[in-house]
Amino acid sequence: MFFDILGVVFAPFQTLFFWFLGLWWLWLFIVLARIAFLLWMAYIQEYFKRVTTPKVLLELKIPREIKNTPRAMEQIFATMHSIKNSASDWQERYWDGETPMWFSLEAVSFGGEIHFYLYVPVIRRNHIEAAFYANYPDLEITEVPHENDYIHRLPPTATDLYKEGYRLFGAELIFGKHKVSKRPAVYPIRTYLDFEATTEEREVDPVGQLVETLSRIKPQEHLWVQLLARPDDRTIAAFHKSGLDEINEIRETGRFVRGPDGKPVLDPETGFPMYSIPSPGQVEAMKAIDHKISKPAFNCVFRYMYMAPKEIFSGSFGRRTGYTIGGQYASESLNRFSPNVQAWTLSKIWYRPYIFPSHRAAARRTWLWERYRARDMYPDSKTEALLKMKLFHWGFRPWQASNLVLNTEELATMYHMPTVLTLTGPLIKRVEARRGGPPAGLPIYGEEGEEDLPLE
Image (cartoon, rainbow, N blue to C red):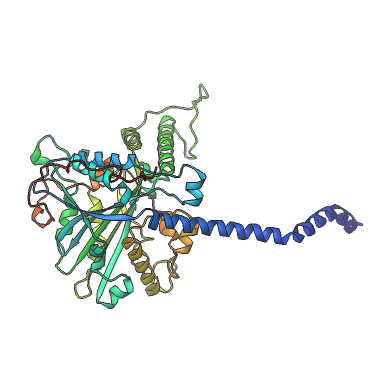
């Protein structure tokens, strides 16, 4: 009797199940179509990055004396932000594969000889050069032919690098605030405004620490620093919203007196929540967050590589370099840089998943070396990440841990032309003669006769 009732109840579901099962070919088609679409998007976006928008490497040759403060560089980053691109229709998104373009800001040292580079889309070159000449009239910008790119000074793969007797350590830096906040990107680091003083004798050039570190390596060593910056409307919108949410959360935390359970304590007489005055630290944090999200922001990746012959290679120097470069921007109450341990090349038996440490270290080196040489941001989709993963290092965890969003003020603090306050001038590649000004008739939208305008 009981089973008869169950049969009557589930008979319609049984019929429906076999009907769905009979349409297996439809479900298989939907799954395969979805996979084909994801593969197409990964392919066409990669084609847009590598072929549709070719890049050019520019070397910045610094004059003997620069008195411009980092404010000049902030104006340049504001220009770079204003020429951002994004897909505006279905054709650009699904057929052309258009994705936001990015810029690579690089400072490298070959045995103590320092060079500054920019790696930019060709279609944006004239805009960026015009911005540099407007703010640094004595600067000289020269194109570096592909065959002379400094990355070709060393072998193309990490395996070949080790075969030639070199060793390397590489890492990426992220915001350390992630340990105590779920929105670490909205908290600012110390910027050049904090380094300014009323008298010139007390001023400090924020890029001085980077230049000093680059200058103090041995002749056989290499130290390469790369800061990728991409203006992306989606990232910027989410970043601005996160900043407002964090301010509201701090305000609510400071507004009410809360008990051990985290809930507001009610006034026994009125029954309403009891108010408290926000602490000075909370007020300063809200002001700092509001100031950061008020300026144009970039999605960023901060990466460095240290290479040296194995006889003089110092792993400790490689690991500490990140702390040295990023430590001066730290604010204990706001934000600081810390290494992304999911991305660095170090791997030991004591690190999860506790197996194959040598294989994992080799895969990490290969993964990071390829990303640096390609000046590559993190993937635009999980499909792209899946296609680029390594056997012993998939690359998903570094992507998930990455959290750098820097505004124009923070970027200008970290990357600008060294001023007269930086003492290692003779080691920097410089312009020997003073420039008379930017070239007359510097093209903005292309050479005369060109019909194609820059991508929007």
